[in-house]
Image: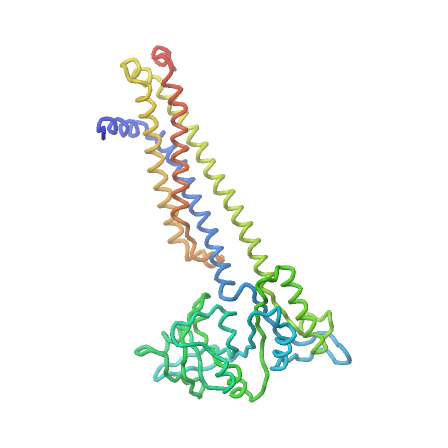
Length: 409
């Protein structure tokens, strides 16, 4: 049953001892605020890593050609290595058991026009497997297929942002889009897990691009995903094998690092995982260290509060108040202060993250935020700690004889 006199007495005590209340409340407020900000920053860093590496498959390998830096087999340094369809076929046939998906890539920049709308975009000419390597989700229509490659059809798949930019009053699917003077039919619209730039890309069949842009069989890059069953060491060994095969194919010196460039996401994923794990542990230690400091601060303050109220406790006992009521009123005051201060700390921390978050992006901290459940859990931890911190000294003081309590200085 709600006892208005009890609550009036608690608020009178809080009002009478403002400095004491502020000291105990600030300890809780600061602990929750710092805990919120630290974990928000940690989540922001995690979001940055996720966005940077999340739009490609984690088991992806990217193979690029460069220029030789060393002479080899009678060939001078400075040769430009040019991949072609035979390079792609060789890699695919010789490593079929270890390859999950594979595609060639050709990169072009075009001016896209639909009616009165015009903008510049990147075009990627690819094989159908590109959809799974890039984690592309088809929203409407379909992706590039093998028939498109075989027939060199002039079809394209556009990102959702391209549709937003150019097709203001109609849908894009089934329409024709002019790319630098050539009409292509839009057969699909996709979205991507990466940033908006990934949805401002246009895909077309590789064979079509080879015919239209140069009438040759050259390719710019080869991308693949290795068998997911390979462990880390096997994945690294596989990428090293690919490097050796390509160097042998193009007569590149073994020690030449510029001519054939193989980037394995396995190494990146392991490095990012180690970094985020280490960061998480550091933040966790700092965060819980802050909570422990808050608990210690509350405990010290509550011991001081109970000592300060020893005479009051003596008077209450002399007037017949049972020990339980004495403990209860002190405990309730402690919990009330902790709840209010914890809530304010939570609000301040989340406000700092909300309005300070955009400015943190320049430090690679994106969408700094924190799980409400985590902060509520931390606040409950402090509330329980505050209750225990108030209960123990209050329990001890309630057992003191009234005459001794009244003599306390």
